[in-house]
Length: 114
Image (cartoon, rainbow, N blue to C red; front, side, top):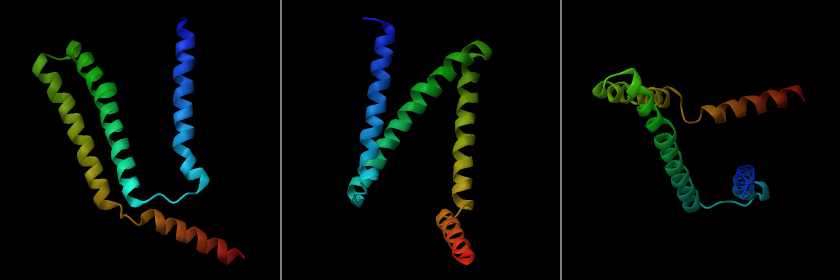
């Protein structure tokens, strides 16, 4: 078969999976906390695999040409640790109810205009 046909089928499958995943939100069905935990764990695993296979492994192969063997792993590990610490710091600085407060403030402003 043609390569374009396979690309089309892959894109079609990804689009259908997105639509199927969005159906519970569109229908408005309440999802139980247990199912939410399973779905969040599944998506975290997918993101971890994507970061390893799509970011770290290509970075290792690219850095082999730029640095000597032990140093390329050091620089990539340093970048991963910097990103991890950045997210830890942001998690401590931004309170969990920050986005809820933004919503409440915008709702209160909308009510004042009425």
